Each structure stands twice: as C-alpha cells, then as structure tokens.
Amino acid sequence: MKQRPIRWSVYVGLMPAILIVVFAYLGTMIWTVGISFTDSRMLPAARFAGVNQYIRLFATDRWLTSIQNMVIFGVLMIGISLVLGFLLAVAIDQRVRAEGVLRTVILYPYAMSFIVTGLVWQWILNPTLGIEKTVRGWGFESFRFDWIVGQDTAIYCVVLAGVWHAAGLVMAIMLAGLRGIDPDLWKASRIDGIKPWRFYLHIVIPVLRPSFISATVLLSLGVVKLYDLVLVLTGGGPGFSSDVPAKFVMDYLFQRQNIGLATAAATTLLVTVLCVLTPWLYTEYFRRQTPKG
Image 1 (cartoon, helix red, strand yellow):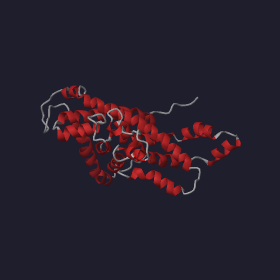
Image 2 (cartoon, one colour; image 1 turned 30 degrees about the vertical axis):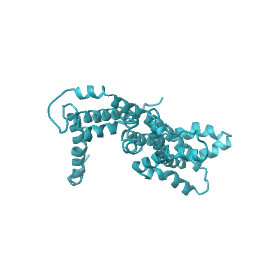
Image 3 (cartoon, rainbow, N blue to C red; image 1 turned 90 degrees about the vertical axis):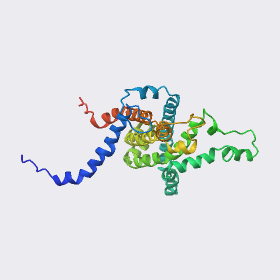
C-alpha cells in the first residue's frame, strides 16, 4: 500500500493552537502544581517545602467547609436541575401554545451572567427587601424567610439561584433529545396501552441517557467553577458558612498573599475533577465493547 505523504502545511497551520495548549494550559497547570510544593507567600519562590501546604490546607476549617458546601451545592443543584429541566421539557414537548415564548422565558436565566443572577436573588432573598418584606406587608407579620442570613441555610440560597440559572439549559438539552425520539415508539406505546409514566420511565429516560450525561457534565463544570454567584449573593458568609473552593483560592491568592496555599487548593480541585471525569471518560470512550454471545 502506498504511504500517504505527510502534509506539513497542516501541522504548520495548527502550530499556534498547539503552542497555546502546551504553554497556556498544560504549562500553567504544571507551574501551579510545582508552586504548591513550595513555601511561596506573596511571590512565587523556589524553596521546596514538600507537602506542608497540603497538610496545612486540610487542617484549615474554612477549606473543609468550602469542600462540604461544594458537595451540597453540586448534589442538590445538579439533581434538582435535571429533574426540573426534564419535566419542563416533557411539558413543552406536548405541543403547547406559545411554545417558542415559553422556551425563551425558561432559557432566559441561563443567558444571564452569575453576577446578575446573584444580584437578582440577593434582592429577592433579602429579608428587608424581598419575599419576607412583601409577605409581611400583606399582613402575615410572623412570616420568616431569612435563609440568606443564616449560617446553616445560606448555601441553600446559592442552590436556589443555581437551579434557577441552570434549569433552562437542561430543558433545552432534554427537549432536543425528546424531539429526536422515533415517533413510531410513541404510536406503539399508545397501541399497546402503555401508561405514559411507564413509557417515560422505561423507554424515554434510557433513550435520553446521552442527554442526561451531557447536561450532568456541563453542570458539574459549573459546580467546580462556582465563584461569582457566591461572591455576589452571600459573599461566602455569614462568616465562611457559604464559602466554596474557588473563592478560597481567590482570597488566598490575591488578598492573603499566600500563593503556596492557594495553589495547593487549586491542585486539589484539579485532582478531584480528574478523579471524577477519568472513570466516566474511560467508560464512555475507551472501554472496549464486550462481544455478545
């Protein structure tokens, strides 16, 4: 077989992108991991300190609280957004009137930045401005809805705002999946007298598995990057009760001038993401199909 000639022009054209990936992404990640093993403070230093920064990191209550908050936010926000987005997609898929308007209204929050989303929900949840004041103005003087100022409930306000922001995206992904299902399946289920909830549970949801995976991956990236929503909505407070890892890293990087501890936290996040994504990537793309029979 004749060997195809190497097209060097293709590699020359891709060289800028390759250099950006190597230096801007891989290079900065390697630099971050390297700095996390030094005793750097305000400026990077080359004094090797072993795993001291990691020992100090996991002995810091604020870091442990931020990890706990990220888990709470991730589990609740992803779970509720998937369920709510799927139900919204099912409702819109019934060929309702003004479908285009409904899709736009539901998807609109996702087009807003987390800064705007945080400001809107800060006003809504503020006891002196939002829901609590409005309901008390209606005569219900004992009504209380002050989650945003409670140390045990502030993180759930972040979850509420996150669901409001993300449910529209999940709805759009699920609706696209629903519209791609073979119409013959719907006709067959009606002929066989299968109840709608059984059809959705045993047929539609398994068929929509790629859509659920895509939505989960997109939402998971948002969970790891969560910063500006918390900054605007609660500021990480009261105290550090609603702090998240990204805010911990930014505070120690730019306010407390502790680069070593901040890079150790960032490296821990990177390892956590790799531990979560690697099994999924292996299962979806690299695992060999077991031959049947």
